[in-house]
Length: 299
Image (cartoon, rainbow, N blue to C red; front, side, top):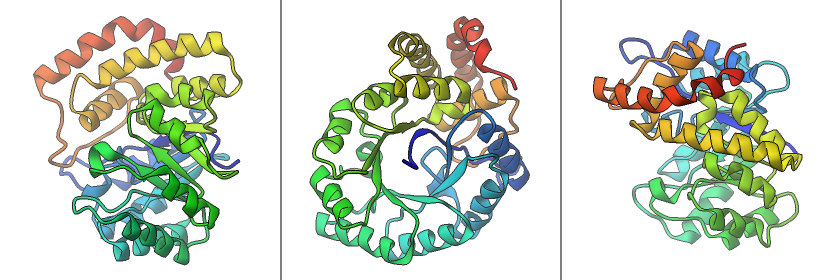
């Protein structure tokens, strides 16, 4: 199954003026792909996709595709508020080399479910690579009903869903009654291993930008049903998530990627560097974990 393993929704990196920095993104994509992840997802939520201009999208996808190493493939987010935008984004991403597409449904103004159905069918008409829906009700404002996605899968429109509803029950609802081959990928890191235990083939973890080796081993252990190792790694992952939650999510992930991986990050307003107070709180939560994190850091 092409959706097995760990997917890292890569950060988008900028220069000191807030401009897209292709060199930084190339180096980060290469280093992350060499850290035992299975897939890179560019232009996801963690990649600040609403902040990336249409003119920047293609260049960013291209540099990540060119920089991924080994068997790591690249997926691209193509969701948009309008169907025409999403169709254009999807067509461009496939043309550049994305091997799968992830489409959040139209957000801000909420369409009917019939319109959402049409939205995904229109995207499918212009691409041949697998298309996944992206369920993220906390940010989109509504949830994608499992029966709708299952029907789209049976019609050959969708290959799966990334579920970031922050609920194991939501993940289970997509797994229950799904057509054969429909991939359900938990998008909340603490729910990755529990979701895999219930039948998910892998997981998408934003914190893998900071500790990719930890996340990769956790996903692999869950898939092989190594329950003892899963319990050890899950406890460390959840503590690491407490570190991430100590500040604004994107800025904190970038701060930690710079600190623990030596990444040249860069910020684009309004997702700016941590304040001194935020840094202090993040570091205070990180310090007790450093010894246990050490085996998962470095080359």
